[in-house]
Image (tube, rainbow, N blue to C red; front, side, top):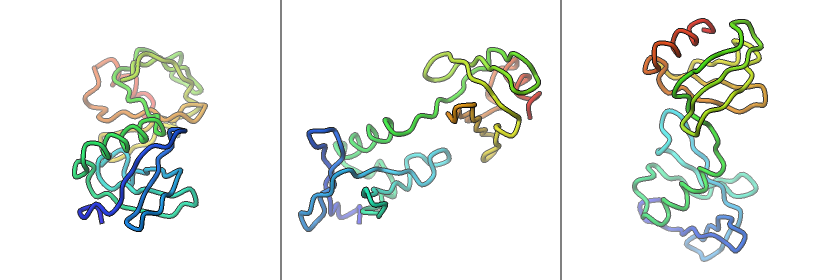
Length: 157
């Protein structure tokens, strides 16, 4: 499989991934999908064709040549949007729905939390917060947040 590198990836003129297998057949519109996007983002990545069939499995992203790894990371980055909350600046109310003002790895933003059930516990100490429009915000380690952020978060957990 991946160790023999029996395929190649490239971009077509429209910026879509093209998978070329050992047989020389090119398949356009290939999508990389992480098996464990939060707990193991660089392990277990499938390359999926437009019909949903797996074309290749990548055990570890760092095993790939730099060119292929860069293509896959770019494609994953454009598909996945999950800002990571670094600090909770404030909330409008401790009752839901409430408006949260947060600082993320992509800048400051505000969002509406519909209910406490929209804060999901992942593998401890990670949390996933889904805002009213369906965007997911990740808190990788809730205990690593500053004191003020932890106090706010504790009111909702």
